[in-house]
Image (tube, rainbow, N blue to C red):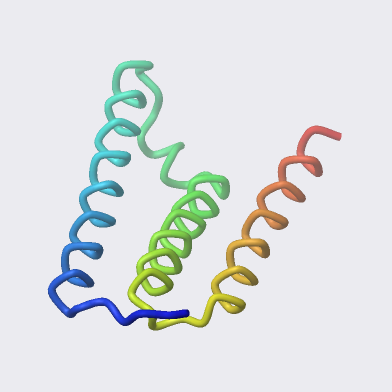
Length: 95
């Protein structure tokens, strides 16, 4: 049982996702500055690019799924793939 969302609701979902990402970025950069870490080192870190990519894909997948533009099985596959990737990278780095 699937119901289509109105274009206005989809717009608000997109704005909410964008605002959430913006708040997370503000907190992230506040923490970097507060800890007096090198911004250059953070930006050149491979972990930084992985994190940015994962955040973007998750936000896009959730918004598209809630908007009914992605089938549930595709959204689930994408999100489970991201979880597997992140957990695999985490386990690989701790060994």
